[in-house]
Length: 274
Image (cartoon, rainbow, N blue to C red; front, side, top):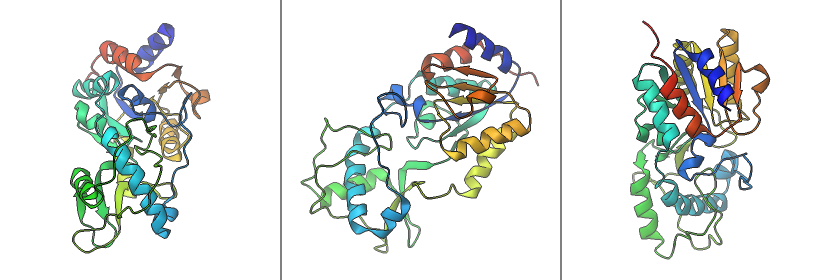
């Protein structure tokens, strides 16, 4: 691994970086990966299921609420801190993340594009009112006082758990208009808002290299950025435990966890000139 890090330093030195991160960056914060070794089996709910079935929404909100209390208690790890340091040094243009945990912002990164949204907010699909997730959690608990968090339940990568039962659960609705609520996350079957992807593209446009950390690039949003980098002949360095869809075209692939590698890169990469 040392040789691969040396190669990455050689490739990236003197260049401004855009950074793309996935779930592997947050595993050291206690949030499980989607596809890594030992990852829990997941059957993600599609947006069509969520919108079309009251029972599906009931199952979603029970599992999401029970998992959110643990998900939201996670803290940034050294990998998040290293990326914030690279930005503060002027080495990174910012972070484009596929994660919805908000840990890059907590770690001090200032320019963060959350491609798949955030679990911190919930929006009404009828009137557009936005609610803080903490406030909604208090409402859910007041309406469902019997709901108790199972600390032994397996936390899933999306921040939820598989509940034993959803019977009797009162689904939260908008307190303004009574409309349907949905977390500000991109469900399977939804597309990333064009303005959000444009923000990610701007960070890449200001960069001279792309650093991918903790993503298998199985989601097309990540591969679209890889393709943009290749069109501009930007070197791509990938840090991920396990294979990714872009390994064959990467300038350097480091098959390892992200925390230590990102810390080493942050310590060794010089500030770009100019």
